[in-house]
Each structure stands twice: as C-alpha cells, then as structure tokens.
Amino acid sequence: MTKKRFPTIKRASDACEISIAGETINPHVGESVYFVPYLSLGKALQLTEVLERIAEEDIEVVEQLRAITEIAGVVAQVIDHWDWTHPITGERLGKTDGNGKLNRPDVEAIQELSSDEVSFLINEFFEAMSPEENPQSASPE
Image (cartoon, rainbow, N blue to C red; front, side, top):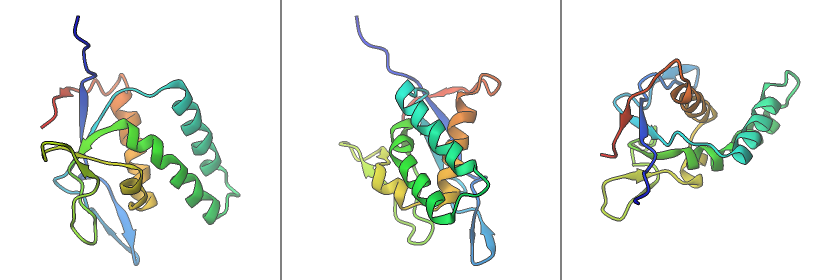
C-alpha cells in the first residue's frame, strides 16, 4: 500500500499588506503559498499560546516581535512551497528543492519577513483549514 500525501492548498498572496514608512504596499501580488493542511497537536498548542500572548493588550512591542519570531518554526512547517520573493531585494525566499522547481521556506526565510507578512501567513493557513472555505486541493507545480 502506498502512502497518500496530503494535498496542498493554494492560497493567493495578493492581499498581503505591509506598512513601510507609513505607506501600505502589497509585496506578494501574483505570488502564492501552498499549505499542507496538517498541524500536530503540539504545534497547534504552541501556536495558540503564542497567539494568545500577542493578543494581550499590554504586551510590549519587543515581546510581540519575539513571539512572532517564535512562530517562524511552525509557519515553515505548514508551508509546502511558495513563490514568494523578498519585498526589498526581489530574491526568492526559501530553499529550492532538489529539482530546482519548488521553493520551500525554512525558519530563516520566515524570519526575513515582516510581522505583517507572518500574520498574513498564519491567517491564510487557518482560513485554508476552515471547512467553510472548502478549498480546492492543488498539486505541487
């Protein structure tokens, strides 16, 4: 019996917004993220705890940034691949797979992102997992 791989869920990144110097830009227009619709209980608990800390009204900015950085490992695990580029340099983010086609994010690539981008990825992952969304499966490109 062959193992069946989880289908990936494609999410467009056009709506990702970041604020730079008081201006809002959409750095990932035309780019997409392919999520693996799986999150272990341990990672779900870790993510929930960090998101609860971020949501606290009296959290300091430095603590909020530390918490978002802590999320990087979880975010990297739920993304199968993406075609995101760095908003400033335009270079591909992540590591290319063995055949040079799929770009897989790692923790370092996630840490290169702004807090707005990481928040966008988290929200998109949970929306992709939502039964109401009823996402279509996508095969790796």
